[in-house]
Image (tube, rainbow over all chains, first blue to last red; front, side, top):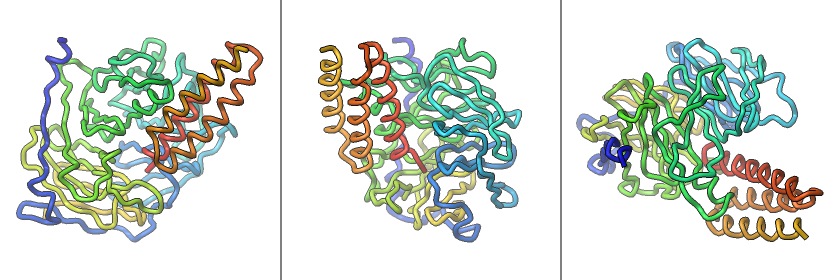
Length: 307
Length: 71
């Protein structure tokens, strides 16, 4: 297929550095905030924009983590109906915040947590992600081998087009198919967004054009004590040259999966460097080419950078 | 008759999914799915049961998703 011919496969080989926490040209980790800066509530959405990273918790609450000040502001989400369960969070370039409160219902949140607007979708979506000014939806995967995501700008949802990138996976039953197609996306850069299926070791980076789809193969088997069932915990692109990958550890933290290894590489699979994380990390908050800030399982911010 | 067939089909689906999702949180999700399927099968029409079954599967995937992707 032409699409297959257009996909560039890059292979990340991270085993060279994975056995040492700090190496020459390696990484070091240090806390840059007090513990429990962020609460223990399950985080169901994350988006970085405008000098901050926004988190949506199951409570539900909207949490703003300032990059410069490394301060946290928490606002309870108000205006939800009792049957609404928010999932996903996207901050568009205009500063508006969006989430799914139900599979067929998009909602805009004000920065103070007030649910300001509901927009019924013409389809049901399992997830919500963002790339630049586009919202990405994951329709229920009833067909296989098709783009798993569809992209639309605000006001054009009925005309959402396929997003070249991850392709829907086959399974025997509808329930199995939904599980096989559990998809997550990390922090993007420009139009590019990294996405991966829960059970896969493959990360697809796409800007929504057929010409710019890249696939990175991670090698979690090279790390000790990795959750092989869901190896990729989080991914962040840093500019057009670097990618940070948080690998899921085999041990749970308070019953939850957490990232126990962080790897930095370039998109050409060269100069891969990894560091073990203790405490483990819940997710990536933001990243540049030289540093990555994580939220630890203790609720503190961890900075990973070169020595 | 039709709701009974729907129950059988949905239960078979649930059994298959259970075999592939052995972790504890997902077993809880599976139990919710099975209960939901029973509820769906109680709809008065085949179409109603089918639509309710889809909602059950959406709830199931939301449950498993939180266990896997909730940070």
